[in-house]
Length: 424
Ligand SMILES: [Mn+2]
Image (tube, rainbow, N blue to C red):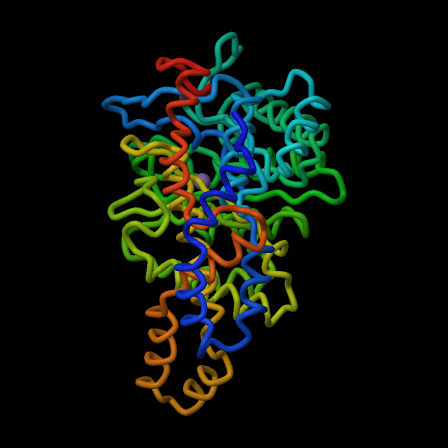
């Protein structure tokens, strides 16, 4: 389905007076509000193809119906999101779940919806039907060279698909590791993995980036071969200038200071991008900002300070992606909330007076530093986001609109109540 422009105008018209009132009140007293609105308009977040269906846990899955049945319908779903929030203009694909049979047609379809192809994701964490060798005991780390070669060949294939679609980056997340002490020689596992990543790296086109994603635990529960930012940075440094660390917010041990990690990776020029999600305990894959919006805001503070320090463009300097997939909400409503939370944190962090904060730091004025940070965090910036959406041709209230025009019901009538997104 596609959204009818008159429905958007009708929705906005009904809410315009109320919105203008709120926006005027926020704009009054907010310095350079036009600049903030422009920055919000430019900031796009890539939607992962696997977040469009209901996720699940290892105990079960409760699909809500109308899920996209193929890559075309996944792109169509992101087109819907983008039409509403004008902030979801990119898709991150997963191979082999989203292999394009006709790359030209897929590219055209994405362009029709104003969507570009962000990082490609390889998959050596599960065995596919007809796969020769198993990844049960790892892929790039594997003790058997033939398994390692199979994993390398898969990544090269992912790069090829990405080239055909106009993507510019490859994300490698490995589930490799061990679940019991003694199972693995850490040094050999690292070396095998590095050798494999080097072969993949050498196949990257010159204008591509490789993102090395880390994760503290799961599916392995004793060691992960790319387990934290230190290990990821080791690989990225040894690989070369096109290799970067990717930070997935859910992939840390509890209470890790992610904003400090981000700051130092940026300083080293080795932060490549983000996977946004939220969690209370582990890799919970909850809606961005639903548990700890303050942490998200503090991360954006470091991102902005660090990126400005290096003269990087906020919108294009790093890869901004969501990586979440859970069990309870309508996936599209969940993604609308996630994108909104990211942009709220971004614009709140833009409100921080960095000059004043630097002065407070130089003077060891801890109280002022906290006041400066928290007064930005406590600002209600939602009308700035709405104004940016309105300017860009989107809707004032995406979730209300989604429900008013009964998007899910229409998708169910098109695709059926039992459709399941590929890969899940
Ligand atoms: Mn991730």
